[in-house]
Image (cartoon, rainbow, N blue to C red):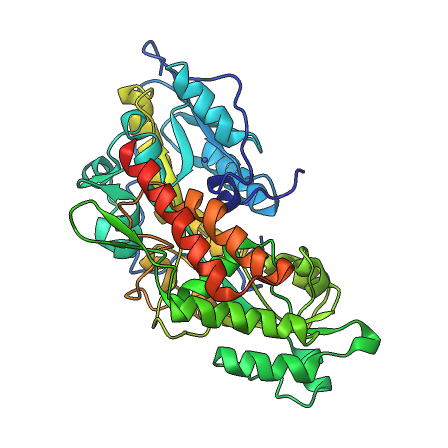
Length: 458
């Protein structure tokens, strides 16, 4: 099985891929036409508060096969495969989901749409509202066609996937960052293994106590190449990278930003003191027991568990910019190439993913949390006893009312370009080249203004 291809990396153009082939639906006479284990709780029926759709009713008048493309190629992809097989075997509608999981998904979908063809359904990301608005149907339709209710999703995530009242992506997964710590290293350093740092100042203090040069152990594991994680922490120090005036104009927020400067000094100080390695793959070092504290996504749980590490996980500490949970969102989209019959079939599958059938032991959205370790975007699932009894999931579940805006105002189309062309070079110049933080921020300001100018003029 291929390695897990994270959607965030895909979106940030760190992974860009090609899509070959295309497929519409094939149904009756009308055929045509995007991991971590967290709980060992036994499967049981879904919460009674979450009513299942009227499944096991009459079958569709004609069998139909729909094409479903996505890029989940790791252990989480295995969960998708199992759930699709379960749906195909148990649904009474004559629906067959034909799934293509491909690490080349992103370019694959781009090439397909460019050729004016495509699959019926994908797992895309919230930025598709900018990239492919003309190729996706309004997912608000699903709330009229099924028993799903829009109010059951975290509002800020729905907003991130919407534009001009059109919902382009129905949230399936929220990708955030978390703080992990090695409990054994904490204990060896005389620290309470159950009490992680509550502030970034405490992070620094604890890291210094954990570092053991003789054992090649570092107290902190911030990676200079992990821009996605660094963005998360830096934003907590100094807020969004762009401000919006409400009239479609954006102002870069780098020069003179004391929060960003504080982050750069904080990170650089740990590197200079030898408490944070200048390494790119600190995740592997964490799995090897060489890192005390690290920032990473939910997928790190799988490697830490496989390594037998005694670890804890929590939300990242708040910084000077206040409480937040910056996130990207991925989810279900139905394309304009789906026939009416295929669209209905896609909606039935999506409804089943969140609600199951009456005898479904664990819905797809529940397994995504229990087996893959992602906090749920679907609030009825968060009330299930299996969810609430998972120490890991509860530790990673943020207040749903906290702002999830990531990097720039949601109306700005090129936030990831900003990350790659401005923030990543900014951090690396300070960490690797010893550039003065103020000078580095001034240069970042100029670069960000260039990105804004190019973006707005397009």
